[in-house]
Length: 316
Image 1: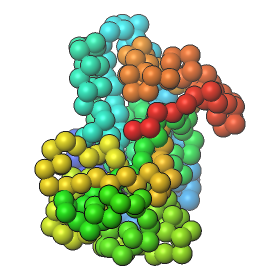
Image 2: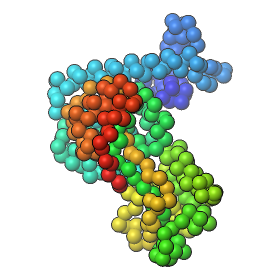
Image 3: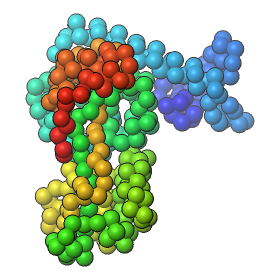
Image 4: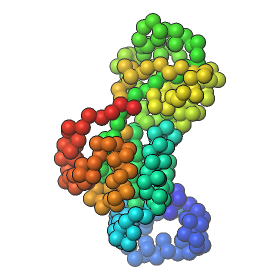
């Protein structure tokens, strides 16, 4: 129910059963537990009760543990085959992962890779429940509490403008400033994905207020609206490609905004399969099997951070 936004019909469809069957099972579970799990508005499920939230959280951990047991069995039955389920953002899926996935597929031809996209909140829920093996997260890190987060790389933002734009001319003679940028309408990532704090903090510290006229999940959408003249784009520098150079210009924004860090996140104390370690190291070379295991077994966040004290992150 929770994974389908409390929609009984969608839940029944996913479970290949009837709506009355789902409703009956929920009532029987509530009777057995002695507490209501959902608030109801007529026949509709309106929200999850506090008791339901606590019980669902435990149930997700139990289901994730069951998946770990299945993984352990699969490992001994056939260590070269299996599934790798990732959740990530559009930017990572579109601009970073293709070459890594291609090389991984050649090395592990009998591993099926499943790529999911979602908001930080959705990706965190998928990892906690065992729906995915790990997430590749870039921002909104407060959603990932309870997961082991391992730093992979840093990335900077680029300012995207059409060729011949006034900011391009300005940038040729002097470093781009936030004051100059604040004079233009801005198009950037949806704040649910990246969080607005880095953007706001930079302008606030400069005593300025950004004029954000459009936000989008997809860097390609941002570039499309920059081409229409709607505003100036702010995207991850890695999302600017050679094909964009025909009509767009990427101006260096690394001095304007603090860098962001990409992390791989997963549940603590997981037993990973060999191909999972291999994928992680292909994505971030410093995340060796030994370092990943040390982070997963670390009893506290402070000790987990110490695992990466000697790591110098690459800048994308």
